[in-house]
Image 1 (spheres, helix red, strand yellow):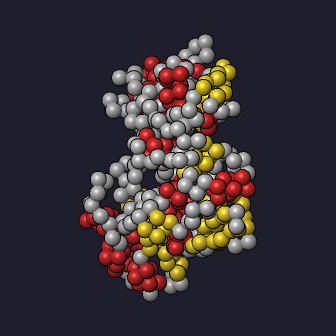
Image 2 (tube, rainbow over the protein chains, first blue to last red):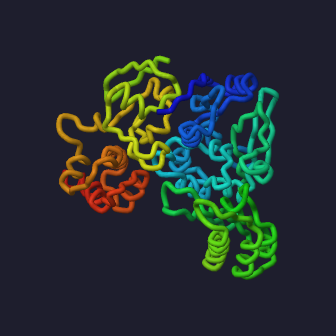
Image 3 (spheres, each protein chain N blue to C red):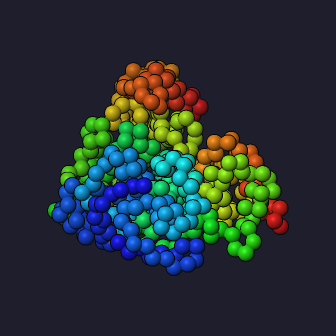
Length: 269
Length: 152
């Protein structure tokens, strides 16, 4: 039995949501609830107030914009999976979040703002050079995904801000997503990877669950652009990441798997 | 807070704290105990119900979010006769202890509405959020993959 007496606010417009965010800087944001409800049930969160974002239509759009695609932070994984326009890499990541019942509720913005180092979609935003659009009653600003996660569960977001959307520029290249967990569905990643590679031009190798924040491997990326072998790139990846031993896996296993993911992708390409 | 929704086709009103879990409101306030609590953290799927047709883990849904929606639980799956999924589960012996069965039936029913002749792989994916600890998956998958086929 979950006991939480916090008052719930349900704005129906973005303006109202931002006004509430200003008025209640300590409030907990809730959209699909797939993380928040777990924290509440476990007694890990004692909110003073809840701001429910599930009734704000402006957060649930997917559209083309100058400079790429715009994903509203309130899109659910199922929205993305079901959209013919969604980027294949984002779609693939969304399909690995929990299982159908979780995908029906869990939102892109929730995954990003929960900022678990193991968040399934997070390396994808790095690999795609995405920008996050943050809004407050004072205006909007864009933060590159690469600068959003500042430390374990710490983000660039200010107390009065909301994540409203994600801008994904049109990028070419070979792309790959891979999540390794205990089982395919309903598992938290031991290692999650998103990569993009344009031979001799550009490379992005982004990982989750191998450090306090989702991270790229700049040395391995430079080596890949310069034409290093898959094995050499994989060896740099293993060196650059900083996994830990925890309840889900060991750092040795995570290093090996991270290297293997990159090597087999590059070899098979 | 007064929450009003359609539960298995019937209009219901419940006075409840808004952050109460849908699962608890169903089981305690409405006495619909078919939805089970397995893990209570969205891992096992035993509490699966449908909100406006979408399957959800009812242990992860704060009840205020179902205000004005249509909720279907296992109690609302059968009409006068058992649902084809339930019939197939019976025919294939797709249940042992039964704790996961209501959730499995809800996920399977949702699948068959969008994909009436699912492949075994599609069934596996659709039921991946419903864990069975009696290791009864084969018979469950046999049942769901075969249910509407046999029905015809």
